[in-house]
Length: 117
Ligand SMILES: [Zn+2]
Image (tube, rainbow, N blue to C red; front, side, top):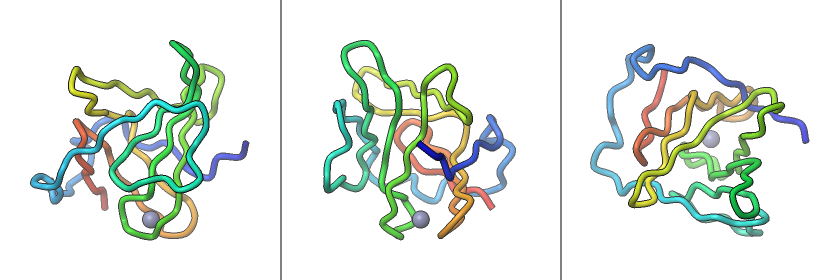
């Protein structure tokens, strides 16, 4: 799989963007073995089997409709980590920065999108 998304800063404080989505409903997580044919907005799909997770996917929050996939495996480059709280609210680290299309650059922190730049 060829990733067209790059990692960027690990720290949201690096961005000057405001919490524009503060009042929006939180992202939730759904565990799947394969990405659904028609992914739904505001869902972070965690793909894997059992304890083994290899990637996450989500619809680009900018509204362009692209599906973004981020690798979680230790040998994936770039590689992301995802943590999910008791309510199923995800935090993705580091930020997601698309290199093509809409060029979106954002953090997903506690279920909220924080835009950069
Ligand atoms: Zn987009």
